[in-house]
Length: 115
Image (cartoon, rainbow, N blue to C red):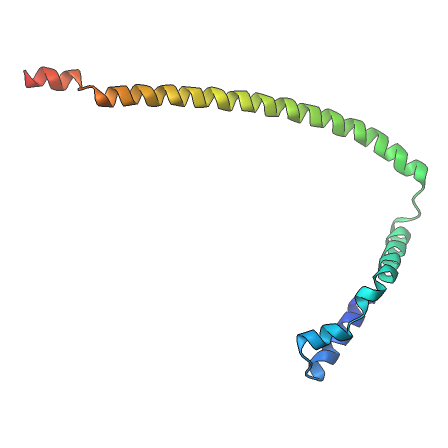
C-alpha cells in the first residue's frame, strides 16, 4: 500500500515534469510516518501472531545465558590470540635484529676467500 502510494506520487511528478525538489515538496509521507509505523507494526504482529510478554521473557532467558557463555568464550579466545600475536611480534623483532647484525658483518666465507 505504501509502495503503491509512493509510486503514484512519483509517476505524477514525472508526468507533470516537476523537478525533484518540487516533487519532494508535495510528498507528505514523513508527516504521517507514525501512521505508517503503526500499520507496519500491526502487519507484523498479525503475520507472526500476537506475542505475549511471558513468551518473550522465557525465550530471552535461555538465549541470554547462551549469549553470556558465548561472549565469555570469545573474550578468552581473544585474549589468547592477543598473547600469540605479541609472541610472534617479539620473535619477528629478534629475527630482524639478528638479520641486521648478519648484514652488517662480513660473511666468514668472503673473508676467507679474500685471503
